[in-house]
Length: 395
Image (cartoon, rainbow, N blue to C red):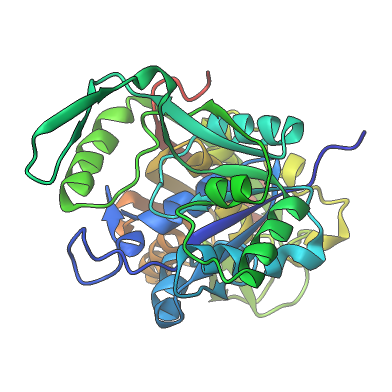
């Protein structure tokens, strides 16, 4: 049988102000990165997730556009007054695309791993509904209104439940429609709604790291954890060269249009800087090269802007919970002069990779008029990417 078509609904329509700050919590940052973007990158970067449908608050469109720049989920739809209504809006938006399995995930849980997504998909393929859960190890007591203990609870049968929750798409959509018709709109999560609709709900292994950020202390703890987790430092290199063609009025270098009397020949826009950086980032995570993911034989990439290639490579790092520590590129050419455009190139590369400009280095040199580069026949670029991954991300 063909593999299941998997979609994800990313719920980001809540106001989430309990965590403090002047924006909803999904737009706050952890270790310099927006929470919503982190969750979105994990889903978009997973090879088994074909579609990602964000659901946002109508007032948050400018915030959403800012934190998701360079990413390509489905167009965001507006949520409702409750989480349940927001999830249904996402499901209805996906209905015409007919996925087999849908994952429903909270944007305030940015640390889901690829392994957790795999378990969600695999469990949903065998069951109509599935949720990640964690056992409770602390003693659990019941208390009265005065805070006095009234009894103990057997924790062996208890689980704390996370997202992504996973479902057969059509059955979850039908359950939501039934609940709407019955004017029932306050189910705490999709597992509860599915159970109400008669679907058996299975539990698969969750992850302690997959925390939901709710309070200010949650954000402080996540900040500390993020810094401690990225202990696996890796470096990748990339090299690219393109020859000059006849005529033209510019070259694309580092995503910047630079005036020149000849253009570079290539299947895409021939941006040697972004091509070399793409290979360097892919090399750091050992995930092939630019030609494997964007083959020149594919007409889709004819004349394509190369910023999408680098954005794809960066998303592969982020999908594994990694961060970009440094992007460093050296251009080799006689002309055009790079110095006047260096800062614009740094800014554009930083924008594509969603990292501070201080983590991007652009240098240039000549070959002292030696070889084809010295004769002005083309431009080459040598790049290095340093990334940090959570320890054990390959497990």
